[in-house]
Length: 572
Image (tube, rainbow, N blue to C red; front, side, top):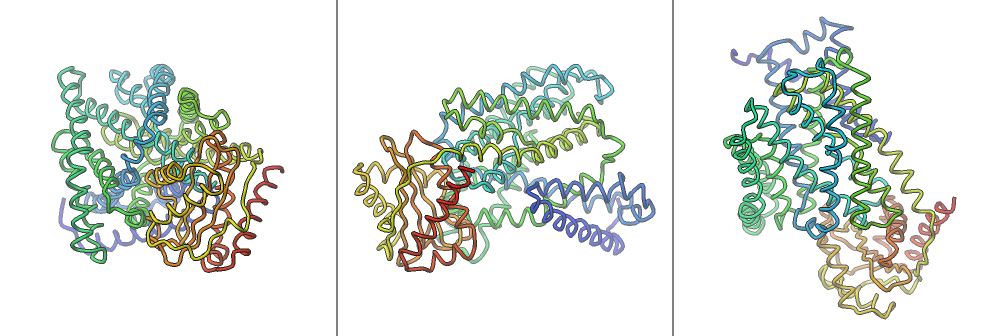
């Protein structure tokens, strides 16, 4: 490979600007249509790749994307950064300690999510005709790999769907998030082992034991000893150096690179290292929601679009599109993940009305399907035809997911709940200097209203905050708790004299706090009320007016009307 010339740089800049600009424009359009931006990015690559531009205007295609090692490597490097940082950012969204509070129900869900899809998928994939395989002698490993892919549920897609319907921060949303996260970690351990076996070239028990041992050892050491070391390092940066330097973001990227190098050195794929790095960074005390937001914007604004568009540039989707294989993988994937999550929900004794929502949130494929498929394709485990089918099935399941989940959520909103919320439940100029003081003030008010023990109320509200911040941004938080022996739902509004730190995603201090207390036995009451409140507070003018207002009657009337409107929607 020769040196990089000015012509190489010029073409690289044209490629980069063309791909990034079209990806963001198409992604914006797809998001307006409630579809994943990943689909748009793949389509940009397909249109500019050999499938369409290469056939319609081959001279133009060959000029912009020449078959040159140096030129190809420049764009490939950016694409690999997208791959690495996508996995790290996915791990960064995980707070394993918080999620472990849900381990009873979440682990049951995750265990069934991992086992049932493999059992339902293995035989249909194993009996595929040999022409779908690169190496028919590797049929067992091929079937195991595709079956393992069926276990992956797209965590980012599920988060987006639940956030759009305002159920992400409910107890049900947190349970689904916890189960999918545990599933992600276990799934990456499985994929790492399968890819290591294929790279080794033969099934040898000694190598299997060594690979499994190294993978598990690295995971356990990272989640225990290295997690503490990273936490202390982040704390040092936070306390001694400060936020303004941007060193925390630099440190996040460095940890990802170091972990990626370590995993490569011990024979595990570097992407697993980046994922685990993100996971332990997500545990750090002083990695805030704002830090996660900054990394998310950096990764998804630049690197990830190039990665997914680059996939389309290298595959001829039209020539390798096989309807039978696409439909097979799509149907088996959606059905097996749905059945597994439904059974897992029943095993963990979830409310019957919520089983459908739990199961639907496990059905979409997405980014991880495509990433793992690309790894397998680059390793020679699967053919281009199979990779195209995996990508197509991920897109189809994502398209189906949004309307399906929306319909299921509308069904559970049909019941009306007894809600207590009067003008006297709005408290202006609440005296509190920090989050904990306000939580104690709120607990006292709830105890006065309900006659329940204020310490128990405080503990339940605090536990929910520790699991996932209830700050929405724009100076608003909606803490909530479900209490036993309660027969009504209660709403309280607190406006503070000063802004309070609340781990808000936009970094703003919280001034308006809306507390929702619902019966433990009525999980859907929480969903209905939080949906109504989130719908009102997502509107910028309404949110601004409520945060800046000092008028109790206006605040009560504005929120009450939105709850009544939601109740009317339920009746409709």
